[in-house]
Length: 501
View 1 (cartoon, one colour):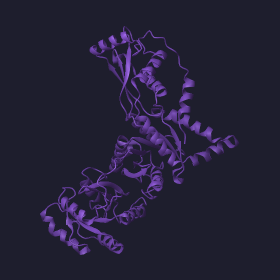
View 2 (spheres, rainbow, N blue to C red):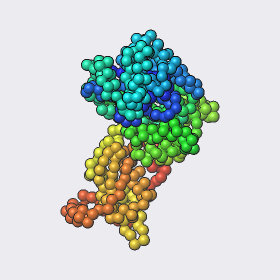
View 3 (spheres, one colour):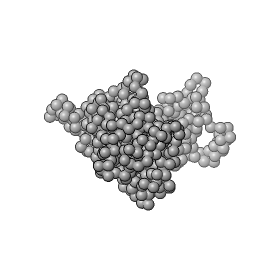
View 4 (spheres, helix red, strand yellow):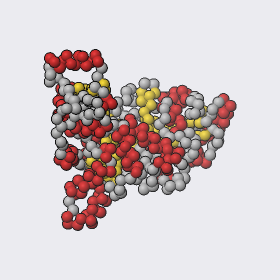
């Protein structure tokens, strides 16, 4: 069931994004006291009289973008208008009727689009006489509101409810099965990938602006679609730059933090990497942040066609695509060690090549991250780990690991109960985590390992239980025999686990 669409249009800086945020009751679009901040179509699903409509924020019509994106922004506005059931035409009460307002009014009348005229920045009754001036635009009496102060928003919603046919609108919004955030540095091809996905599932190949201009995307843009009967949300994000650039630019600062928020609310992250360029500082910072958030991640290598041509020139007749992919995988392991467990997918977003397979792989990681293992299986794995390598003993300290349990999923959260958490160092935690990834069904997702002290009461119960059933949970001290691992074979095995699309 499709939601009615309401587009918010107007010239630059009249408060369109502020209105969207006010209606949504939370910050959806970046708001900045300067024109041209919004470029793409920013959507939000809004309940009106127990029915849902899709409300779409747009860029400022008539804005002259200094980066050469004027026509792109205008095209996105026109798409939003064409797809809408009703338009909220927003004007600025404090500025009066401007030439840009008249141009938009002519466009709306020419296309015969149902329109509600909204006079924003009418902060109080003293502004109401200025509101009536906008009736000259030919859309009846305007509604004077203040998006900033939430004035008369109820009146606007009532008018909107009367103007949109809600009889076929859904009464419930399907919960998203999975949120997929697409992140990466500037010009890695994130928006191109979003459009490739939208072309596959929504017949909207120009869902977001794609340009060679760095920093084209500023907001995080949610795109909902149905795949195999499930609702998925793909989140396009702004490209990440070096930190010093964000200090002097408010828009880039907000864009970066929106990208971080998108990672936090994602179930799976598609980390887009430009194969034609070396791994950079922003790439490493992103990898570190994704790892800190324990998010399943796919290293999506875009523009592989360009990298392939370069490698062919280098290797000549000796070039093999599989060898090149393996070589690049080893390069990524070394450069992005925080996420060396992540599967790798090679795509060409511009041609839509392998996009479907990447989404299938995202579903696979989602399933991994949400899987629970039985306590028996977990402790059998722990016993194997402890036989291979017990925690190192400090002076006059005997570290003991009693048993393990899983307490959560997404990420899989495993707890080791020990005699003293201080005896278990970070190196041993990493060793146990990596071995669990090999022994348990979490080969390609992050594992959150917690170390806890076992209480005296619990110790008493466990000791009693182990006397009756010694195999119930392993208890291993520093005297356990250690088996040396073959590092090279382990790396080879892990490399073989990586999925390459």
